[in-house]
Image 1 (cartoon, rainbow, N blue to C red):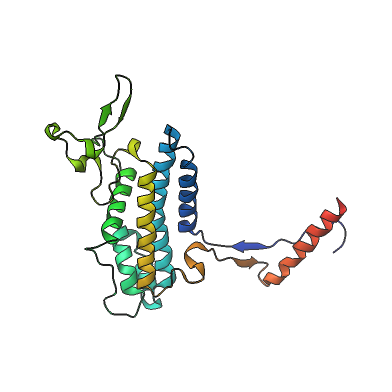
Image 2 (cartoon, rainbow, N blue to C red; image 1 turned 120 degrees about the vertical axis):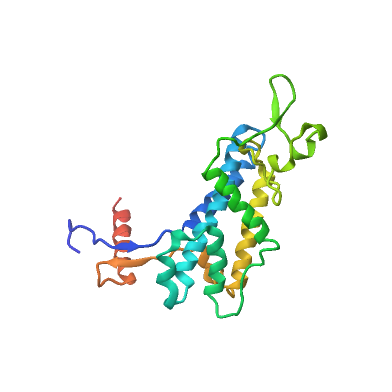
Length: 242
């Protein structure tokens, strides 16, 4: 290379692994919340982590549909991706992406029972209703705390299902979300993914597929990955001069 000549330009393309970044952000917020669980910032971190854990499920199944569906039905399904509900996508994937007969989630048992409830929680967050009740127990005239379903007075007329989602026991009041609720959501997400991986004969976890990104060198069109070493040489040369 002659002195003063601009560095060669290489461009790589990837498709965003939405599951990886949503799950990773949820993990980060969850661990930060552990150091702030006694104040309101902890509540904010927890409910944001809760939503991200749930949102990552759609990122995973959309990517898996694109990657694992057989060629003869791939385009048909992907072109109609937005027409399927999230639950339908999770049910369709093992049915269509494996040669086994009748491979599907058992909708009557865990983890599907809890997964379906996480989807409900997501919908309540994303499409909030105007009449979403919340209940608080007065500690003093100026200090209130979210009412636990275990503390509902018998004569109050308040139902347990007004306070929590039945399967996960996650509060319906976003101000009542705490670390233990995040741990529940994380466990359900992890177990649902593990069950999908089992149904797909390990394709989800193989070579860490579900958390990895694939990079493709697209410019210059005739370039090879080994050509990137010239950038390392230029960087080393620049460092040695400084």
